Amino acid sequence: RPSSVPGSASSSRPLRAPSNMTCTMRATPVAFARALTRPAARRGLSSGSHGASSSSSSSPWRRLAPATSASRAPRFFPAPPLPTRNPAAFRVFAGGPDGPSGPISDDERTPTRDYASEISWIARADATKEDEEVDPAAQPDVMVMPVFPLGSTAYMPHSDHVLNIFEPRYRQMYSDILFNGSRRFAVPVSDPKSGRLAAVAPIFYLEDLKEVSEQTADAVKYVCSHKVIGRVRIDRTINDKAASDRSSYLKAVVEPMEDGDDDEDLSTREGILSERFATIIQNQTKLQEPVRFTENLIDTLSASRGEDGLWRLAGLWQSLLQNRIGAKESELSNEIQTLLRNYLAKQGTELQNKVAVQFDALPGDVKAEFTRLQTQYREEAAPMVSAALYPFALLVQCDTHGARLEVFGEMLEEEEARLRAKLALQSLFSSASAPGGEATEEAEVEGTEDADGKKSDDAGGSESA
Image (cartoon, rainbow, N blue to C red):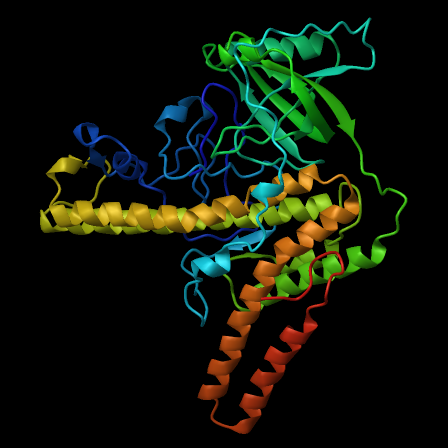
């Protein structure tokens, strides 16, 4: 389950399936899962609710708890929240076939490129450093911008996001950017391993602000709509002490960041990348992938510059990976439900909303299975979370469109190799079970067309396993 940023902000939009996303998942039993992460003396299991926790209309997709209840969220893994600019371009079949090849191994999931090592991070905040005063009149060339870390999510340019603002220092930040007319702040990625902030950050521009303190009993001050309008490179922070003791929000000296190859014609590479993306969609459909894009997306693909180009493809890809994390979490949820239901059935009790048992009271084999499920989930989810974070942070950091084409091309390679392997096995099984030569030949042609259909990308997306 995506983790929220304690005491700061989170999306106010319910994280649910788009209208054209099909899903057969059941709600997560958050009370069971949360118990696994508590100390033994405090553990307790309850059946929880099978409905969604959001106050919005019903949907087959599970929703997060309200942003103001961050302490209630289960803490399985530091997964970033789903982007609020959801393209509504997926189908999720939680109970769908995994394909002829069976489960995908960890080696296939792990990217060959170490994207995290290529990301630049700013120095850690030093609470002993004196605050730096910047006089705009005396230093007109120095740009100071508020910094609002929003956790481990790489936000893409041209995306839209809604935040609930409740912490006092960020209430003040919004008052300041409204008063001075800038209406913007930087949102760097926070490394979940070290806590460091990325040196290149997207710029959130405040488009709309609603005062909701009366409706929420002052639990939430503002509901704010933003658009990501560009990027900045953070040179240095200037008020580490204030930011460390949370008496104020962080500020930094920044430099606007623009691509250095705007005049270069990259249309050939853009076209190849779009074709590769389209082939992936087609192969996902052939294999009936449990989480996949819808085919009507193919006609809209473009890897060009601008809002509807490569940045949009990156947002789509990020959403795909994060929906897969959600599907993996749902698998764990269903296994926990089954485990607890079987235990209660042996006790002569049905799984109902108000059933509660102490974790320590469970038999040793049941507790051991809970621990095994949690450990297995963490091991399988960790590379998936990294794949949904670091490559996208590197895309934001790239200073040319050509460099982004190269990085994104390499990001597609893992999925291409995985789909080719599954198609090859599908063709092999079809050939083995075919009663006559005609069916065998047809299966082989299908596999050959898929293998040869992938085109090499001179931007770093060469065909490789």
